[in-house]
Amino acid sequence: MSDPAAGGGPQVLCVEDNPGMAELLREYLDAHGLRVTGVRDGHRGLHAALHHKPDLVLLDVMLPGLGGLEVLRRLRLESDVPVLMLTARDGEADKVLALELGADDYLTKPFSMAELLARVRALLRRANPGTPRGPLRGGDLTLDPHTRDVTVHGEAVKLTRVEFELLHVLMLNPRRVFTRSELLGQVQEDAGGSERTIDVHVRNLRAKLERDPTSPQLIETVYGVGYRLGHPP
Image (cartoon, rainbow, N blue to C red; front, side):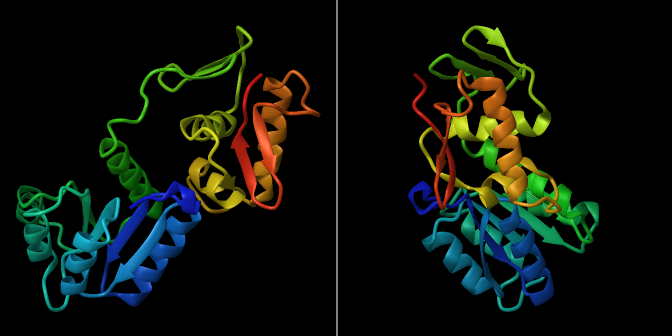
């Protein structure tokens, strides 16, 4: 369901009958670069999961109409979309049943939003095995996501954690334009930062990577929108 041309991140379907919880999830995940749509009952959740093809489903267990476990059972007959169950039930038998029905993960309420985000990202990574695992290259720029080594023009470059994550996102999606909000959501575990902090990190990256930071070739500014990986010389 992701549509890079639309400028958005992975699409998450949230099936949650509690309006307050649904809005909290939407705001938090949106702030971290995910696009969230929501429905409030099991029947509509199953329909949306099958017909709108989200990248991941957040599925509450206690739903009106059609319970979350039944939604999951029917969904698994036709789809292998990652499903993260959300529920107040914390018994071992409940978790085992959900996992045996095909849930990919299980999170008990109340939970921290940071943990939820980490689990969502882990499921999305697992669901996209085609994501490059080796070093990423663009011209004379190389980034290894496993060793976290970065070289440019054959020279090692030391980056901060945020600078590394920012460069990683851009190199995974060459030529795609990211808004500052999307980049902020990709590199921060909380929503406390300002979008303008991205400008600072980009400026620092250019100072470390570009031959001439005043005429950047690696990280281009798309005026009025954000940034993208450029055509390295």
